[in-house]
Image 1 (cartoon, rainbow, N blue to C red):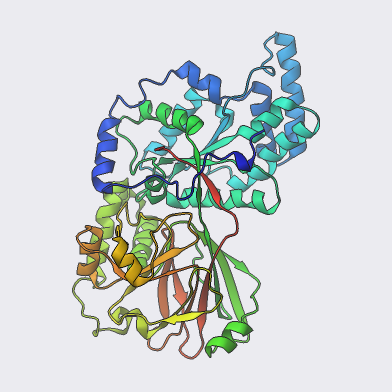
Image 2 (tube, one colour):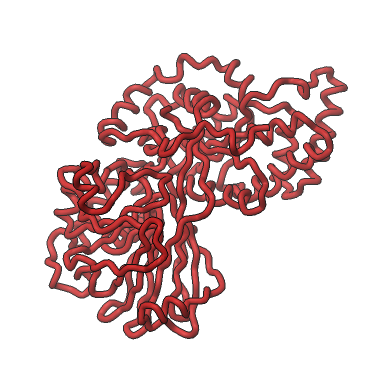
Length: 495
């Protein structure tokens, strides 16, 4: 059984990232009918398909939401194999795999991809996220394998220990699955299956960061074999994740995104005392986890408008190219390019509503960081990739790192990078990688305090899921960000 300590992992071992726009085009061209031709379908099935009784057991447990139903299905399948003389229980398990598919991602490719995966592996090992929640698979599917293993089933024990997961979807889908997998750490149900990615989203920054590419290939039917083959043989690396806790005056966030859940208010008296904040006595709290970024300001407002437009008129968003065109058009309508910072309260710099506190690495004291007056969008970044593979933090030279007190950024270093974007022209030059963003800080923990003034709301997003955050003039809303104590295990698609 593979243990967590068996990871093929070295510090900062996520793959390096080249100029992402060029890389994505090359990946799509390379995959146009050729990439994956060298993967033998029969050999792939031998390595990734579970024995019949095991995959039926997992599928039944998930469908019925019952470990007992899975155990019964395993017994029935074994009897059927004995009668037909086609038992598979003794077959060697190499790298069993389960695939989660977001059939709503990738334009119209999601349903077709699901059928292709049925052909390549088996129907029981492919789960449509429209029908099955990752948490149900983790609770009941993995639970069924664990119950079988406890009963002396060494094959089920082997499958549970060697299982790998592929997620076909965008960054939000991948984050959803990773968040559910973290429950295994909390319950000490180890090992946690590592995760690889088939990129179906618009930005695909998580996929880019771990070597899975930035776009769904043109010749995808052949390329899918290559994705599955790589997932079974590539090494495992680590990814930091960050928990954000929002404490606000008693009330609620309308249109709550999947990334957030309402929780009981935490004790915030210490922060109130230390920083002279006017936090409310009665409060509402929300909690969520991000893997790539959290941002506040104009970029989140554009994302919010895009998501509303896509929900109201889904026929306009038929794939990554169409989505990016809508993003660009919506940016122009929001005044980010044409409105000076002094024109409207909603378009002024974030310093009017935001105070930023950080803890540096190996430091227990909070330090207030002055917000530059020109910054309209504050981004807290965990990965190098942002906004479809751009690198706004940049590849900084050693002398600049030393001068600013920074260290080289990595996705598993326990730090996030904080930078700002000014008006749309500045953001455009940053995202074109002609200049770097406005570097503000590196931090091991962050607290943001927001107070409305002339603003009655702020726009926030985590890993591409935006929401409208209510603000009150004389009461503070805080966002506290801390590293989750467990690493997420990722499959490095570009070792």
